[in-house]
Structure formats: C-alpha cells, structure tokens
Length: 404
Image (cartoon, helix red, strand yellow):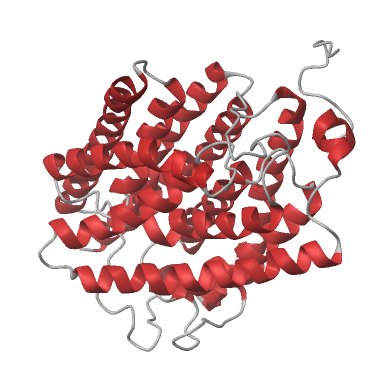
C-alpha cells in the first residue's frame, strides 16, 4: 500500500507539472496570436507585454495571490503565509507542483486583456493592472470557487471544471472595463458610425498562435482532472482531452460555414477565433462527452461570428476578438454545464456568472480609472499613429520594413 501511495503521489505531481508546462506554452500562443492580429508597428510592444505579464503573474501569485485564493481565511478571501503553510504530505502531491499549475492559469487570464487593449495603451499602466489582477482580483474570486470557500453560500452548486468563467470570463470582464476607459483606436470608427477594418500584420503568426493555444488547452483542461493516480483518473483525462479537441474542431468549422454563408467567403480570422471560442466554451464542462462538446464548441464558434460585429456597433474596439472569445463564449460555456448536466442547476451557473462578473468588472474599472487619473493609460495621438514600439520599447519588431 505504501508503494501505491508513492506511485499516486508521483503521477498526480507529474500531471500538475506537465499540464502546467503545456499551459505555460499558451503564453507563446497568445503572443503570436496578438502579434499576428495587430499592426507591425506595435508588435514589439505586444510581445513585451506578453512576456512581462507572465513574469509578474508568477511573482505576485507566489507572494500574495495563492494565499488569498487557497488560504483558509473566510468566505470572502483566503489568508496565510507563503503558500498558506501547505505541506507535500497533507496535499498528497508536491505543493510546488500545485502552485505552478495554478499560477499559469492566472497568466492566462491576464493574457486575455493584452490583446483587447492593444495598439493604444501604455506599457507600464498595463503591467501595474496585471500586478493588481494577479495579487487580488483573480485570487479573491477564485477563492469563492476553486479555493474551497463560497461567498455567503451564493456560489453553492456552481460548476466550472477548468475555468470558462473563473479564468476566461474573468480576463474578459477585466478587459472590457479597461477598453471602456481606454476608448477605441484612432480611425477605427468614422463620424457617421461606420466601422473601418484595421487588418493585422501576419495571419501566419496568428494561425501559429491558435495552434499553440489549442495544444496548450489539453494541459489546461486535462490537468484540471487534478489527479492521475488511478484508472478512473486517466480515463477522465482522456475524455477531457478528446472533448476539448472536438469542441475546437466544431468551433472552427461552425465559424467557417457561417462566414461563408454571411460574407460569401471564409474569413480566416473568424475561423481561428471560432476554434478558440470552442475551446473556451468547453472549458467549463469538458467531461460531459464528445457529442455535448461538439454542440457546445459549435455554438461557441457561431457566437464569435455573430458577436464581434455587435461590439463594433457600441464602439468597443477589440483588435483580436478576445471579448467575444473569452467573455461571451466563456459565459455560454458556463451556462451550457447547467443545460447539459442534470446534476448542475442553471440558476447556480447564472449566479456564479453574475457574482464573479460584477466583482471583476467593478473592481477592474476602479483600478483602470485610478491608473488613468494618476498616470494616464493611453499613449498620445502622435505615438499611436507612429506606432508604440519606438516610444515604448525603443525598437521595432521588423526594422527592415521601411515606412513612408
């Protein structure tokens, strides 16, 4: 029996580490996707934000966020010292493996914001916001769900397997608050309300980023099984990964078919975001079976095609479509668990969406507004037109390109 316990300890720890490495690889996917869907004059800044936000998320979650999320504390917030005084023996797997796996989820939520506010936000205000997000905003709402504590019982029965709401919609709500304070890019909307497309710089990079994210999602959802030490667990992981893949396929194909129907051409950017919306949608319930995952993913792909133009109608400028993919599809995926899983109440799912969404949006809006008032979050018109790279980073991603 002692050998069996050792084997389970090793396998469970390995799952956290390997899955966490896959999720960390998603940071590269976000960087490539955002660089490809934004203009080359801003690419160095986009890339700098993506690597810096990962570093900040790791450090702040270690020193502050993990304890607020997983410490005992009270119903609202956890408390404790470094990693809440947890031990390997008490956890049943290495504490640092658990920390690493949970930390990369924080970075994922922060990455969602990076694309939405791209091409007109200053570098350092963004990184200050990421500091607050990873230390306070994300861990507090995470404490109400995955942290094992509930806010006055309000979130009782709420189910989110790997984070359609807890991770992706949290990033989406924070991004929405930021972009409202920030405003749209220069030239995006005409005086008469018409929308002017601003093409990205490199669809090859965007496609590469999508495939990297798709691959990393197998760790994101598969690792959320949280154990690999039994036959039942490995069967569960296999089901989760197969379901995750099916949802992405369905989302991509649904977006391709719908853009062909609406625009008479297949729009690659919608196909890429359709796959990602399928992945976000299935993240709340990737253990519900292949057919359900196909349906959930397909609806996610349809949502992206229909919702992206709606943001433009209200002049919410999202260069990469992250609000549609992570916020709206995340809400759909969370609701889908209540629809397709008879053991989960749709009311509990709605309550979780509203409580977490309200907290994240309001707290994020306050932080963004304070940053704007104190130091300003938007670059000058001259910098935005010329490109952020030279002014924010002192270099260009493609220095050989000669601009007139």
